[in-house]
Length: 615
Image 1 (tube, rainbow, N blue to C red):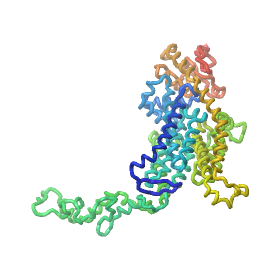
Image 2: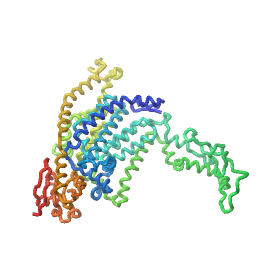
Image 3: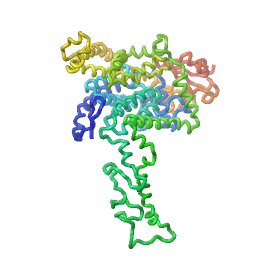
Image 4: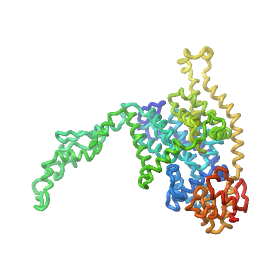
């Protein structure tokens, strides 16, 4: 069976298997071309640009390295900051590809994984657009906007949990829009959504959107689709006689006592009758099971029916089967997601740290010092958002405008809300992570592509005929059949003339950057000049590289009485970029080491090595 889409509704028709692949070969060819373009653009100078701009990259890679090589969930004692599934996936990639033994800088393992995720996100975004009824052209434009914009190229390369969570959110949306009618799509959507949350907790904000999309794309009851109600009905039993009533086509069994093979009780022959004649009597010291089976054949038949259909033992499945189809699918989605997400608190409970986990989550979402509101020009949120827009104003601003327009489209409204909801969080004034924009990029691209696809339909003469009476006077006089195409073409040409040269210039400049050179030089210098037992204070970009060389690196955020019992005197070298006064004020041992150190070498981009002299 194959399902063909018409908007959100679905109709089930028989299609030969050969045509199923034939009708997708054009889309497959388009998608393959897109993957080649985006893949080459993203892989070009992947390690050199961006430079080492945020040491969260190094943190996640160091935690992944610890899973593979130290068999611990982090390189230091685990603290409840983010759920660990994100760097577990990086660790799996590093283990499968032998990445940590293959590359010069460990962070490149994470960036290679981000490259794979970018291609996976492009595939999922294209499939999602097609399942939403968008044309191949606008679906391809959506992927290009997502994959080639300078803002996307910057954040897709960086090792972040947001990149991982975004891919799983897209996977959940693709599952939710599946044309299949069974519970599997809801279960898969719930599983992907749960993995997204366990990869980065901010994915919680998008769970209502995923549920909304699942609701939209789940048909109403009827239509002949096999679901839980049919299965429950097929397994009902009669309490008086123990005879099982079921659908032969679904369960393929016969009613006991009719002579069908394999349905008799214990001690019966092939025809379902008790064994007679030459059968030997059971020894006196053994229970006579055949006699027992003959006396309780009805009860045994009923028990066998219950064991064959365990759902009939509980009232839950039957009750679930009587609910509307959409409600059932939402319940399956929620139950699957909750079961998987519950593994995280179960892990904390097993370690006796459940209160610590809840305290951390409460701090992350509610009490962590905020970055200010987007509406405040003096806030940190405004400064970060301004940096995003300066890098690429077209994707975010055009996506915002398109999302406002798509609120009028029932088909694409959930995706417009997904983008606007994330923008609303910026206005609220909570803490703004550096990688936050990553989750906005696919929805901004989809809003632009979806708006173009929707506006293109305005060209339909029937559309004008149906709505001419409700249009303004100047619009009622319009006789041309290409209104929508004209608007889309003009806007596209204007944006292409302005944005494309800027994009090409930025990507060309970035392709020649060499942001990894200072850190590679520092790691090489440390290997040749630092004694094995010396303690070297570093950020997490260098931690794994020095650890692989057999040195004794100390992550600056873990300088405490356990790791540095003599305070600054426990530190022999400092290899760091400049630290802000606020950071040093919270690290007295590091501040003291700086005060008693001398510059040894400058590697560029602010990265220096200093030797602590003790003077």
